[in-house]
Image (tube, rainbow, N blue to C red; front, side, top):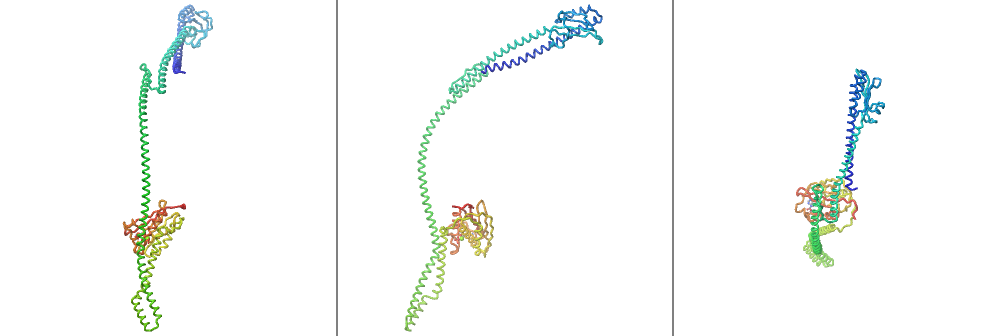
Length: 541
Ligand SMILES: Nc1ncnc2c1ncn2[C@@H]1O[C@H](COP(=O)(O)OP(=O)(O)OP(=O)(O)O)[C@@H](O)[C@H]1O
Ligand SMILES: [Mg+2]
């Protein structure tokens, strides 16, 4: 169904409905007022007629009644009039014969009249006594004709109006749909890609406004489209130049990458060389330390051996002289030999030699033991003596058993306070951990001159086991703190420490167990060494 038809049908049906309502209300009003007027007129006429006839009825003046009846019939539309006595005896009547012949039946409402005559009556009474009554009949044909005419006229006006409205709707609808069609045609043209479209603008109404707006929009679209085409062109150009640049840059990057790879290889080579030289330097430091450490005992061992060699030669000479003495039988010669031997004993200072021999052997033995210890320490430092495997152990047990070992050494001048927290068992090398602890306990003991306190604690902190050994000893100078873990760094007298304890401990804790050793110290107050061990719950490979 087209918009035009919808408009016409819509407006026509609204119009028809409204007209129907208006006409029915008007006609209803017309009918009611006319019917009321007629019924009022009938009752007034009957009452007036009854009043006029009263005296004549009372005096039984039939001639007067006759004339009254004729007089009253002059009223327009009155078709008959009748005067009756108290016992319904007819006194006078006039009107059309056919009408007078009917049996009187009073009408109450005009609407109920079926024989087109409205019959009504009025009683003739005096002081409450009824002396008779008058009956009249009014023709309602002219009234119904008037109403019918009004009905017909209203219907014609309604039909005319409906026709006019339909015609106007048709014209308006046609105009509107035509404008809309031109709009939709133009929109289709635009969507097909042709933006150079304009709708003819007619008049000044809203449709014209829409057409103007549409034309402006189309013009804008065309401008934007042109600009977009231009941009697209520029973009294509840019894209081309960008591709060129990217290709060039990529080539440059590939070259740079090659250079970087070469540089990286060079760096790796240099790093390997550096590492090698650092290793060599460490070996050098180690060798220098070892040389220094071994040199001392070895020096006096060699010097002792030289002296011992002299002593042995002296003894050999003396033994040979004694052997010669046993062979001599002549007493003079034996005396002479004795003198020679005594002379040699004096010369060799045999008494001193005998005394010195013991000392020399003891010193040489001690010196050799010391060299052996240094070599043993070195072996531990270089982890030559490995073989222990990672096992689940209780660090608190390690602490307690190590404390038992050092107890003899510490108990005379130190009070050892132990505070062990609850720790999970962890995979570690318990033997090596004990070695670390032993060194820390001994260092703490050595640091305390006279009486002092060593506090040993263990706890779990941030998922790691922490063991701290705190002493009230001499403390460490700021200069020395940085050297503590250097191999052979010691402040102890020769023979008291090799300076390998902390270096070895560092290797065990940091390298073997991926833990840490922290130091805090204040000169004259004391030091605290803290060993941090990560808790390992699964057996490492
Ligand atoms: N608790 C401490 N208080 C003061 N100084 C310390 C303490 N622990 C270590 N040091 C200093 O660090 C030096 C190095 O200690 P380290 O354990 O490595 O070797 P050492 O004890 O001298 O010899 P070794 O342990 O090989 O017998 C010690 O000589 C000492 O000067
Ligand atoms: Mg030590």
